[in-house]
Each structure stands twice: as structure tokens, then as C-alpha cells.
Length: 108
Image 1 (spheres, one colour):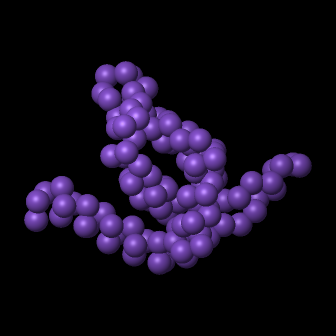
Image 2 (cartoon, helix red, strand yellow):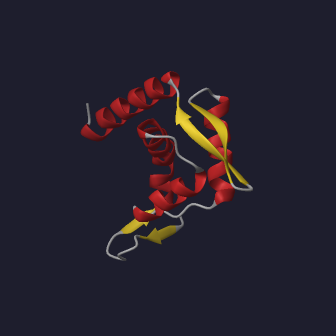
């Protein structure tokens, strides 16, 4: 199993255990405000979880394909980036997954 350390090196983070939380983090963050890929990479890094764009963008496309996210291009000068927002369906799925996670972790 691959492990990474948090930014403070104080607490080992097992990528296998945390990887299932990444889609929930994406949906929560994209529900607060429109978000782009680099912001997600940075937010996860602040939590001690490193993710490459090659891993993140397929995840974003999959969540969009499932109808949990929608995206639209935003032009900044010559650059174009995609902004992602959580859909109503994404909020419902995220809420249900968080509820199930709490039940599993609390042993109920």
C-alpha cells in the first residue's frame, strides 16, 4: 500500500483509505462555489493529500458524466479553464454518501 505524509509530516495518510473521500470533497467544495481543477489540487494538498491532474481530471469528468457536476468554460485572457459546480443530483448523492459514511464509522 502506498502512503504519503501530511504536509506537517506528523500523521501518515494512507492513500487507499482516503481516495474514496476525494469525490465527496470535490462535490462539497464545488457546492460552496464554482471551482476549477487547480483549486481542487491545492485544497487537497492543504489537507495533506496529493493528487495529480492526471488523476483529478478523469474523476471530474466521471462526476460530470454521472450528472453530479456541471462545468462551463471560463476565459481568463488567452487561457480557458473549466469551472465545476455541484448539481442538485450531486448534492443528493453527496449527502447520502456522507450519511452512509457516518453510519459505517459509528457502527450503526
